[in-house]
Image: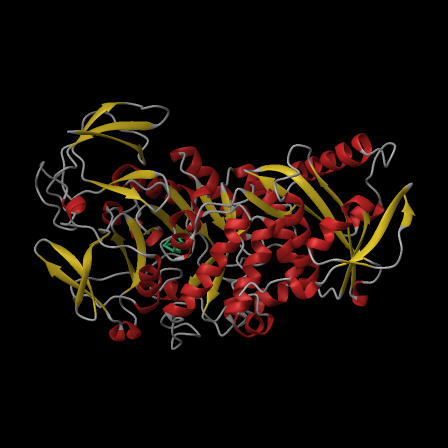
Length: 601
Ligand code: SF4
């Protein structure tokens, strides 16, 4: 017997029970246990009995040894040595996930999945080892997929071009789909299971942009409603009923609430807040909410006050022409409002807790996705890059997903950005990024770098950056008597360097007069004492160069102290003119060689 500890998704477990467990280890994510029951009325499975829905997984009699263990954790005893999963596992690599998401799997006719809808349209959630991946199975293009699901013994195997790759399991239909409300609405019309443990719903299934023909061409929100698969409005009490059931019987661990745009736009946000409040009060589950940035950004405070844990504000594409053609209502909002909303959301909910879908395969260039991802990541917004999936009946129903090779290149480039910007899916508390079933990106991630650099994201970070400048320029070098903060700080951007999440350095960049003239100025480069051999200074200067170049800068200058001239020369900067006296010290005007800024993609 071996001891296994896990975070249990169900909050209320009263005594010993029989469980079928799947151990989840999403790459470097924390382990979780998902409870799965026989989807029939035959009662729980006996120890040693095979799960008819997911026979690859072992059925074990699990004794709960202590409750809770510690703070919400439970301790289990089971014999995993005999686990067929341990004996047979699939060789799981990131490219395989990208391929499956793009091509889909051909499955026997007896296996059905989700019809239409948004997100994981025409797909089904599978488990590759312990990782949930929502793979297309029903779309027409899947007929050409090299992947095939075949029954073998009591389980399934995945084949590629007829060659066996390894075992694969299907996430069974959840128990809560059998339930219905007192007024006869099926729980499955109110919310769905996404991935393996995410309860997802569209609170308001109507969208004002469908009435005006300005709806996103890739969207299926009102199609699901017209097909009778869902109801127009989900009330808080209905969602509480379903969420309680799904949490207790199916081990749901988080909730996604999205909505069509209200009339007037933004009016859907108080509804999302009310539903969140009710679900959290009844279940304590973390809730992710998705919305279009409202004109009145105070509505984000309403969501925060309601207890929303994470938010998704989806731009979908950074290609303005594509956006105008395929998502005209989003394009009309304008990038400035999106930026203000992302920044405010990060300030409220924190870095890593705000995300934006970027749909690959809308006709944009991969480089635009990577560039957009960097813009988002710098703000602390997780760019959730997903392959486009055609929804039957939508304006793009005949388009195809992007090919896996393109997705692999994009995900690899975006993962490198995440690493440098201290973002990771595993740090997200709830929602699509936490679920991860629709994107290969989390599989491409590696640990955040120990030294990272980005714009200040919160008031706390700004205060810390100013404190470092004060230490260096006021106290240590005595260049300024009281403060080094001046009117230039309001003009530009403040960057920070972090070592293992602690801010250790900063630099500022701002335009010299009119941004149109292409001249930007860098300054106030300061690294905390004790970290001056950490490369933080070089990282800040390189990031500043990259940033101004992206803003269209053609001339980037800085006035540096005489003792720092050789440091800047090593980074490719050249002196311009003679030494000059500035704040009572000799300074050298220097200019960066922006041709040395590497391309991202
Ligand atoms: S990633 Fe989002 S859309 Fe996809 S299955 Fe998970 S919750 Fe649903």
